[in-house]
Image (cartoon, rainbow, N blue to C red; front, side):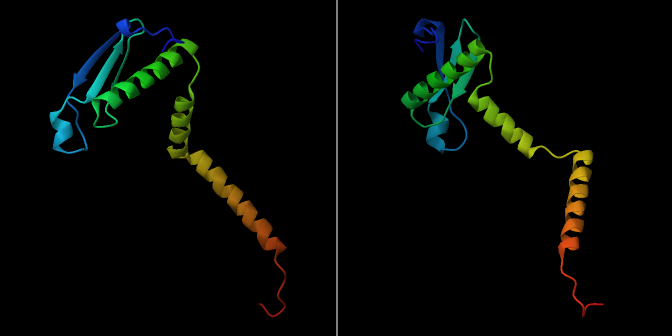
Length: 122
């Protein structure tokens, strides 16, 4: 936080009720941490664990990453990883599919040409 010049006084911290998996205990306690960094306008919520203290730590770490992304202007490793996964899951276009099938057919023809000729086969 010191490297990015993020001051504790610039952070607004709220604790809100959690949700999701974890049972009734998570739904009753305010273990979800919401942070807002006033100068940059970055806002995030963190509910990775049931512990409020651990969530505070994780939220500050995530906040530093987000502010660093804004400051550097480059894509972070996390963003690059997410984009790679998104590209991998994306459906192929019709043109890509046709091109892939054509390549497979050409490869098949090559492999058939390499086969030895069986004299008994008609």
